[in-house]
Image 1 (tube, rainbow, N blue to C red):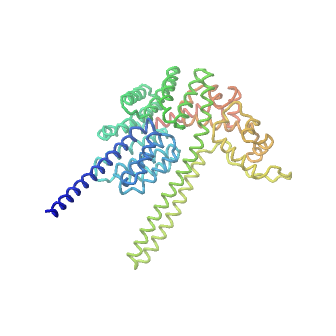
Image 2 (cartoon, rainbow, N blue to C red):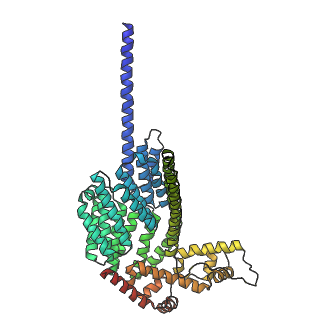
Image 3 (tube, helix red, strand yellow):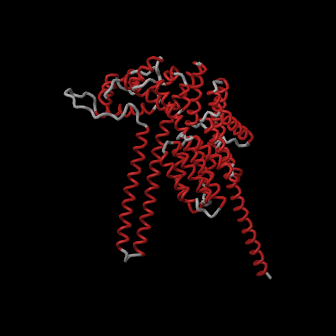
Amino acid sequence: MKYHNEIFTYFLYTIFFVFFSNAIHSQSLLNKQYLSNDIEHLLNSKPDQALKIAQHLLSKTNITNNEKAKINFLISKTYKVKGDYSSALNFLYEEKNYEAYLSQEQKINIEIEKIRLLRELSLTNEAKMTLQSLEDNFSSSSNEVVRSYLKAVITLEKTQFLLNEGQLNKGITLLNKQIIDSKNALVTHQDLQLNYSITLAQLYLQKKEFNQAQNLFKEVIAVTNKQKETPIFAKIDALLGLATIYFLKQEHHKAAAIYNEALMVSQTLNNVFLKEKIIAQQNVNYLALKDASNYQLTNITSIENQLRSEILEQEAINTAYNLVAEKYNDNLLAQMAYYYRIFYIVLGLFLVIILACVFYYWKVIQTKIHLNEIIKYIEITRSNFIGQVHEKKQDSKKNVILKETEELILNKLKRFENSKRFNNKDISLSVLAGQFDTNTKYLSEIINSNYDMNFNTYINKLRINYIVEKLKVDPNFMNYKISYLAENCGFSSHSSFATIFKSITGISPGKFIELLNSENENKLVS
């Protein structure tokens, strides 16, 4: 009897232990799910808090690979919201370690985030390659819902490229058709629907069809205002689009109010790139309002943001190159492993293996060539009237400037050229020398010997190059008066700007704008 009682007691303990363990495990899963949902709700409004929750979840020992993959993606989105593109890219590319645990839709979303970040960093070729790879890998999916969603997001990204390239009619046609074809995907993904509306509105805005653009921007703002967790980026994009319309309609006071609202909405994110974008447009509006006091205040903030964003952008570009190179290496290693397997399986077909190795070597060369083309493309798109540093001519006089000092100053000049500080009216040889921690004699001699021009010509060419690029990429600039263009790039008067513009480009600014307008009209007609 005693023996039976012991067995019965042991049985009860076992049941209790199993029940208690399952209860703890279930509670743990619920807690992790609850915290994971918290991250999604907070990343657009309180990204720092979302990041702390995500890092807390990753530190848990009982976290699964599936959960890690989801949290890593949320962390990458949080870093993107904060403007830390370098960290965002690192977490996105880390997802390759959890590829087996990701759903098809999750994989698609990760690749889309990569594309958007690469495009944001002006790595257009690499972004397009990633988009093509995404389309190739998932377009044959057996899941109809996945195919529909894939088509919707790919069309949106293709339209973004068309928008950036000025192919407005093609972009509008493509997007409107896809809105009809992707009704289900847009209904179930409200963020995607908002992006569709914003992109379509931006296309209409560039076409100067203000009424259609304005209605779409207002619809987006109304939708975001109703949501419990406001999609801040969508709201800011809509606010900036609406403010631009008011600016172009010369309703500058309305535009000012919208810019202030956008800046207020962005405060919680502390995103340098976003602030720079808003303040830069706000400054232009203050100039139109002739509000000198507010312009001076925001201009100081704008310069600070520009310096910070340049550093962050360069860091992100370097990260992108490293990650892209690593991805190529992984692909090459995978190909190598594949060829080795073929070699061991079909050992007798030695000739086939040799041909495969030759093909592999050719692919390596083509990959290197393509990477060099990407680098050269970026260098060309960033080239200007300054051109490359000339090889110094041999001088009979002894060069008193140390080579290390000269290289340091040349590096500072390159950073200066990539900024917009040359548009400051107060810039001078002595001011720039002070910023470089050198003297005017050294700075002047280095500019003369390396660029084959004096300081004034150097500054003027930078300014003219800046305004020419603005006219080419931003159609709004062609509507401004010459005096505004002169002031925008740092010239003290209309006449001096016109004289210097013609001496550098060979034509007057008015003629240049006229020719540019004609070219744009011809593109629209064709």
